[in-house]
Length: 100
Image 1 (cartoon, rainbow, N blue to C red):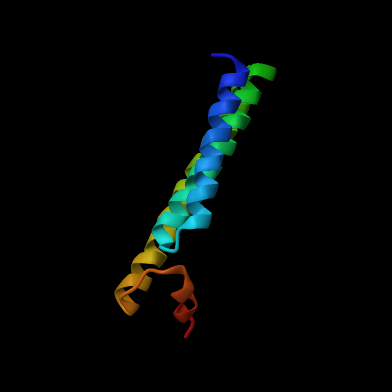
Image 2: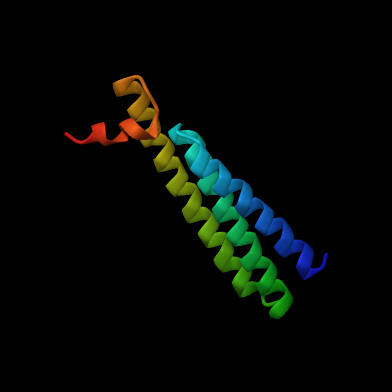
């Protein structure tokens, strides 16, 4: 695979994620859009690292970022579940009601 193809796929992932994050009001869908955007950035960085310096240390750093992103998304889904259980809705407009 050539670098241009990797960057094109990364840009497409980022664009789809941006559209999903900006056009949705459900918290889970916004988080899925953000996840796609972050995956596009990670793919672009991984592709650049692989083509510029095929040293595996950059790939290990990306794996650490993916692991941190997984924990962050799990916590976000927990907050979305709490919002849905307590208030009965999961819209982003009503997320300010979580304050006590």
